[in-house]
Amino acid sequence: MRLLLCGGTGFIGKALTYALLSRGDEVWIITRNKPLKPTHDSTLPHPHYVTWTEWSVDPDCLGEFDGIINLTGESINQRWSKKAKERILSSRIEAAARIADNLKRMSSPPAVVINASGISLYGHSVDQVFDESSPTMPADFLGEVVVKWEQAAELIPVERLVKLRIGIVCAGEGGAFPIIRLPYRFFGGGRIGNGKQGLPWIHLQDMVSLILFCLDNPAISGPVNAVAPDPVSNDEFGRMLGRVTKRPHWFPVPGLFLKKALGEMSTLVLTGQKAMPRKLLDQGFSFAFPKLEEALRDITR
Image 1 (cartoon, helix red, strand yellow):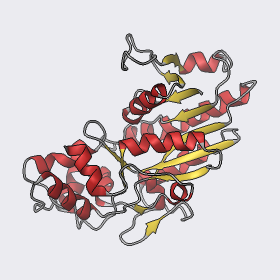
Image 2 (cartoon, rainbow, N blue to C red):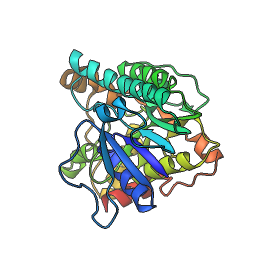
Image 3 (tube, rainbow, N blue to C red):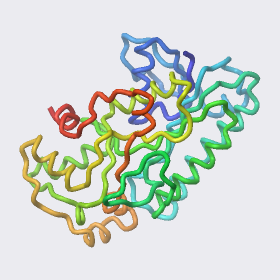
C-alpha cells in the first residue's frame, strides 16, 4: 500500500512507520520540517518525507495513495496555560482541516483515513465501562478537545473514516509509561487521588497492530476504542505494576497536592475512563497483550 502518515515522527508514529515498512508498504511522512538524515532502521527502505506546505500546494504532486493515517497533535504533557490549551486544540483541528481541504482537491483521493482521537470524550467513570456505542459526555478540557477533534475529522471527504479513541499507550521508552513507573523505581509508588478512576491502557505493539488491522479491514469505520480489553482503575494498575516490578504500592499521592502542583492538567491523572474495544473484538482482532499483567511484564523486563 502507498500511505500518507501525518505525525510519523512521534511516539506512536515511529513504531507505526517501522511496522508499515517491515511489511512492504510505501510510507510518505508529512512533517513541518524534513529530517536531515534517516531516522529508521537502515535494513529497511526509508520512508519518504514531504512538508505540509509542499503537499498543500499540489495535493496530486505525490500521486495516488491507498490511505492516510493522521496522528498529528500537540503534546498534552505540559502545563495547560491558556496558550498551551490553544495549541493543543488548534494543532488537531488544523491538521484535520488541511487533510479535508487537500482531499477535496485530489483527483483520486484515498479510500480510507484513520484519524487519532481520545478516550476522554466519554467523560469520567468509576464503575461504568464505555464501548463505541456509549454517548459522548466530555467532562473536562481534554474531553472537549476530543469532541471538536472528531467533529473536524468528520468533515474529511472520504469513503471510510476511522476515529481511533486512544488510551494510554504503554512502552518501555517514550509515552507516559516511564513517568508512571518512575515513583516505583524509587520505592514510592501508590494510588493517585482515591485511585478509583479508570485508567485506559494499551501496549504499543497492540496499538500499532490495531492501526494496521483498521487500515486493512474495510468493514471497520467510525469510532474505535484503541484500548486493551482489560479495564482497570488507577489503583489496580499501580498495584499490578508494583507486583510485576517487585516494588511496594503504598505511598498515595493526595489529589489536592496534584491540583496545586499541576493545575487543570491534574485531571489527566485524577480522572479517567474504563473502556472496552468492542468493535475490534467483534471484528476478530487478536490482542498480543490483552491482560495488564502480561503487558507490564513485557514492558518492564
